[in-house]
Picture 1 (cartoon, rainbow, N blue to C red):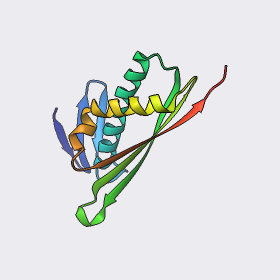
Picture 2: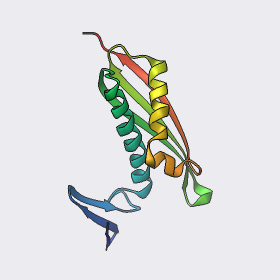
Picture 3: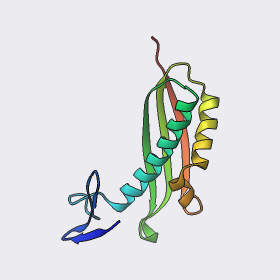
Picture 4: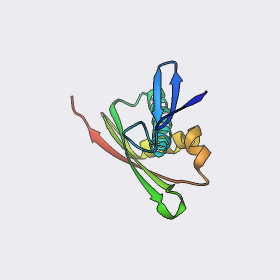
Length: 130
């Protein structure tokens, strides 16, 4: 992976597109946004694979994030809250929480920062009838 300097940040060209990174949202994604997105995206991907293997009927999975940063430490990310909203049929909260814990153990992004960033995960289920 190579990043290239541009006037207002950095750019990376990937096989599926270009990514602009900047401390100013006008010119690209902010680095903290990319970190939160990578942790949330990895968690969701692993979680979804587990649910698919168990044939849990998920119609939609959305993750809402909240981030706490420390302005006294260069705006360091200290906490990320991931709130999973799951829509489907026959959803079992206890089983979903167990699967979410398993997903966390297998998410490389969450594991990479587990000693420096607190990650809190919560679930909300919306039962769909057919």
